[in-house]
Length: 154
Image 1 (tube, rainbow, N blue to C red):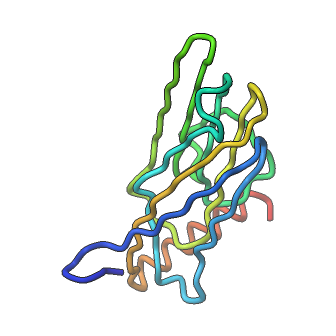
Image 2: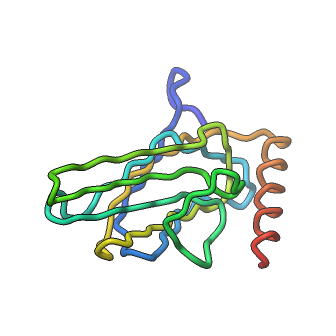
């Protein structure tokens, strides 16, 4: 979808997830003609600079039955990863984000959160570019989603 004068529409979402949990961002429509692509993903602790933490948040195309801190870029259900590490003792902090920006989807997405150091909640901010899908693109995105759901064992 486009806004005035050809500008693209950006949808933003933010949330706070407890460690070892998952959030759902509802995006599906009845006809599947609206697609999205991730353009920004940021991760941050709920209480910055107060404790040592290691956050790993991942964006998936399908709901996850287990949540961990390992990252596998060969997983075709993975849309992006955000990490944040902070060490209070060493007075250091760092973050990283990888988003597979060419990937277009038209169904709900799922954000998982793993924090193994102190089991602290974490915050995320995500920007999605909304795109209008023609019939062919709609069919491809929907078939990819069906294939991903079937490989999950649902």
